[in-house]
Length: 342
Length: 250
Image (cartoon, rainbow over all chains, first blue to last red; front, side, top):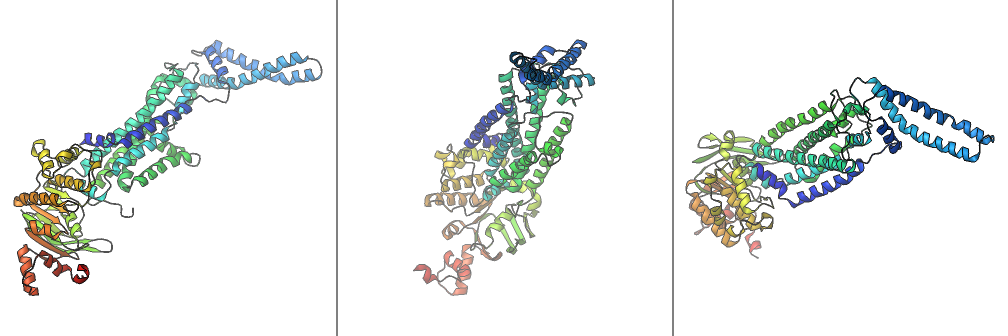
């Protein structure tokens, strides 16, 4: 029975079209989301981090403090040089040279702020940390681009397959069968969860594939706690663990969405309304993220900013599935179940 | 084998669809006759355990069918008016799938024979999306017949079938009716005449008459004084009071 359930997806050309469209859209969105954006010159930051790469030492700390002093000095002297030039104590060539030094120091300063922030964090933490160029990794962690594509894919795929059984007489025919109630719906739920899981994993593989293609997985064995943003992680694990954990979180989220959309499809029994309700439910929290409690927003949409709330989030997501399971069971066994007002 | 229906009642929001309906249905073909809205479909939906009743009871050989659940549905074949099938499944896939839903053992049914009986052998491996209305209907009949159920409930099974298919269907039903209960609703009087063992007349959710064709025609003869009466006349006798025959014939 389960294989037939899978066939209801794979036998449908519209499903393959939807999957292809979803994958292409996800790839485009992810390509954009994985582009490193920083409000300071990335190359300068990279130079700093390449120079400092490795465990923090006294020498490195001294160097950072010295560099900070140097930058402050160059920036602080700018006004003095300007006055000197205005007073004729400096030639134009000398002034241009000093001004270029100043401009470069300003650029360095903005990148150095990120280095210094890291230095401060390293001074405070008691966990194993190392200096390394982490902007790309950070971008991967915070990129949730394409999750909306996943939501749409799941809503369409699940509602589309459920729609095949929505005509009243088809439903009657199925319900008249010995296994046409809960066992039938259990198979449907399992099939939907499999599709949701595959969609979610495909999305994660696209992200990881694009990341590998663009950045080639450097620094995978560096300690994860080196990235201040993830400092809530209690365990001392290398960066690559997060590259495994994020697909797991996405998988939990994919299953969560699928279970809820399945329940909606069962309750609403209308293709368009199910898709509409599903997309609205999962889209409102991020759209109103500033106005609603962050915890609630994150419950519905995974934000890849990863810290200590990961475990409760994953558990909360997965806990929905047994709940949906029980509600669906009740609905499918209930005689003549229908939503009269729809 | 006997289905006993006692004082069955079904209320919708603004309408009473079945109003103290009682009857006993034995093996053979029982045809439900009545105008639209008489309660035929509601009655069949309740018999197929698809719609909750508002009152009364239905028992199969003394056992309440609603508490039998899956055990009852295992003995049931049901054909609704216009079921849709998965358009990208072949006819053979559909039968195999519904055989699984009926929890049938692989050696307990013969898909090729079933397809042959509904004249779908040549279309067995074609996708249902390309089937005509009549072919879908025949496939539905094959699904209902899967596993040779003890009770077969069919809502207007011959609607949309061409004369040859109807003939084939009626032969199959006659052949199958020996040791099982077959309940059919139809508006085609000639079908009822050809295959009915008994006829149940429904009007406004009530059982207004039942019996064999002979019993029903005799009743009309004795009431109306006509010399020769057929099932059309019986139908008109009970349900045609608002119809001006002259208008229809013009």
